Length: 342
Image 1 (cartoon, helix red, strand yellow):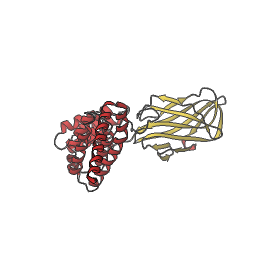
Image 2 (cartoon, rainbow, N blue to C red):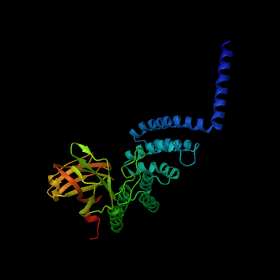
Image 3 (cartoon, one colour):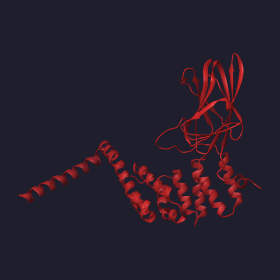
Image 4 (cartoon, rainbow, N blue to C red):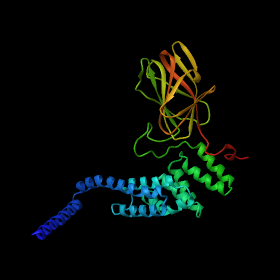
């Protein structure tokens, strides 16, 4: 009797699986909905499964697990799939812990496979360049230059190029990549979890809105395109109609390592022009760090969306225009004397 029950349950179980597989194969919406729920759970499981190996710094075992993870993902797609997010998170976790060249070498095949899955993954290009830097510098530089093409303003690829050429005592190439980094203003890839103010990381746009009397903020944003680097520049913002204000909010979405030096505000109204030195402003920000000096207010950015709030002691009536003098500067990634010709 028990054997018959077990046999009956087994038959029902396998028939259920068979029917489910057939339904999955012919019903796209059901298949998509099922995978949408299952794959994130599988991604989390794989991430947790390699964490202990990362803590033990057993990078060959980690690499083997990720390669198997990638091979499994190809059963769903030969290129990008939902699993790519999980794979990238796993590789990112491991790569942030890698220190020695040997550890990066252990992950070389992983990086090659990740680049095959998505040739435009900036971080994968930089990691692969690091892994190749001890035995194939030409291919390492191919990946560095591709990373710079993908995201010209980010710093990681330039740092890796400088590290390679500094070890080779190639001062000309060090200067080349240092100078290129310091002058780059184009955007970079965004984190997948959010979109910033300008839908791209770049050094060309800033915006303001006006702080109104009574702790209110004008919801109208005024954007200025054409940011200049490494010089005091005047940025003009004109409200749609004269407005009473006690300050401004300055918005930008820069990458890390940018110094925003605020020098002066000029307030234009029917009463004339009033100049306000930066030292007379009350300044705060969302996440940047402030260095005050007699020459102005210098904010060091962390990257991402940022708001700098500048307030006065008084309310200015019927403002027609505000001009803010700002020096936006990329901070160096190596000391200056190695970033220019002697």
